[in-house]
Image (cartoon, rainbow, N blue to C red):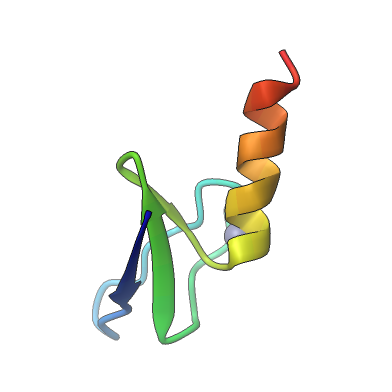
Length: 50
Ligand SMILES: [Zn+2]
């Protein structure tokens, strides 16, 4: 997991909630981007729920 700074010009879309990441920090994991730690955790839980 990697925490990166959100550069204002290109706002990525969260891979979990599909909203634009407006925060100044992003969370990256396995080439996916999340706007909050909650979204990242939720994504993990969904994957484990198979
Ligand atoms: Zn999100």
